[in-house]
Amino acid sequence: MAEATVNPYPLAEPGLWVERIGSKVFPVGTPALFLDRDGTINIDTDYPSDPAEIVLRDDIVPVVEAANRGGFPVVVVTNQSGIARGYFGWSEFAAVNGRLLDLLCERGGFVDMVIACAYHDAGTGPLAVANHLMRKPNPGMLLEAATRLDLDLGRSLIVGDKLADMEAGRRAGLSCGWLVDGDASEQAGFKVSPLRDREDLGGLLAAVETLGVKTR
Image 1: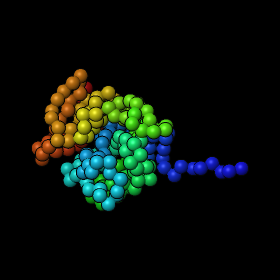
Image 2 (image 1 turned 90 degrees about the vertical axis):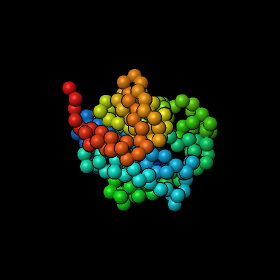
Image 3 (image 1 turned 30 degrees about the vertical axis):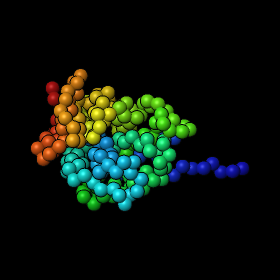
Image 4 (image 1 turned 60 degrees about the vertical axis):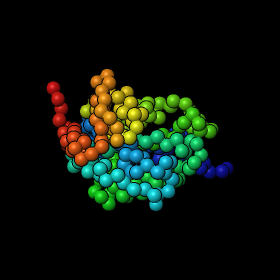
């Protein structure tokens, strides 16, 4: 009888990567820092598949460090339609992601969980799913992290470079987000702040440093 093939990657399902990094235990109800990946943590090279091309954005490293110091989980939530489209596979994603985490670690930053969604309506086979719950702007990846880490989403925040990141945060019940090179806005109790310059970065750092403060 042939042995079953074991997938070497942390796939919860064919199009969903859920990787818990490290073994740190967080108190129940801890807020989190959610980060998009391409264009937010690293400079976006358009469907990055070569780890040698990964370059960190300088302004995100101190944000990750601030969350680490505060004892808040850092969770990467990233759409990866390039996999569904056949541009690269999970092995290339793993190599790129590993390089990114290594670069962060070299700079003193640590990520606690990575969730990636490869579903897209332009995909093929089991990855050809339109409007999948896990694909931003839907909130599925944030909700998945909240369930696995017992997070308080209402006190969490998200940083991303697309409006879909902000919408995912709003739908998940977050109250604020920072949009890389974006504009300020507010909708239905969700405030978007821009992340363009040193002043904006200072505001984001202050928000991360006070994540644990509960308001009445």
